[in-house]
Image (tube, rainbow, N blue to C red; front, top):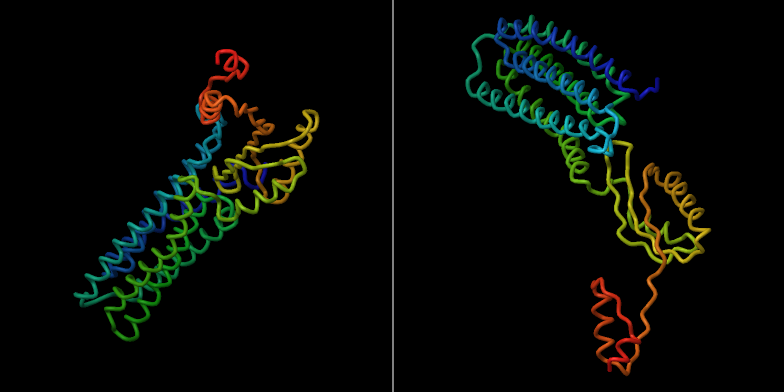
Length: 322
């Protein structure tokens, strides 16, 4: 079993899900009892993250389905959709927290029980930090798990915010700290999730991966002996660490040498640019037509043929007809 197998990726998600849901329910009860918006907001955030982890688990399961005639690249891109959904969910939750924080700043509660709020937030910080630790390694090469990891980081930051708010209420009796900290946490969450949403959209829109420079790849391809021209060069990403490249190569080589050149190019692209899948079309240069300048009508027909007409022009026939 490899370190990136579906079973290996699902295990930390299951552990994080169980811990998250269990604590979120307890945190919600303490938040309502202590009149702490920050605690209630964090519990709601954690409950939504439970749905997020469930979505990530579902995407991880679907992504291991084998490729078929209907899905020739497989189902790994479902993880990108899950990452986009996770990012969008974070924005929605952060917006709700921010709105409630603004309302609370305008009319803070008369009493907030800071001690239960503080104890619960400290326990939450420990659980959220553990969940983030469990998902950290896999988040580097899986956008779906990166979305889940960012949710855990956001939860940990929320816990820190609640701790700060509880201390401010306890020592300074500043009840507005609850709303102020919640607003800051909401802004921080949105700023942190923007890169995840942008990267997910870039993959779904099949943009050129940021780490690949097409002009550099084109120059690299044209450096091979026998390649005269590179056309229709395209690169896109199926999922993280699964980049694909397509190119039409105009080559001037013997037929026997073409297969060897193809293998050399594919090996070089994998070693130099870490592109695992390449689709290369190799054709000989199109020979220029022989033009008889004394036959204007034949010249017009040749131009028409070059511009895209599928018909073939026979100059000898044109000359005989003239």
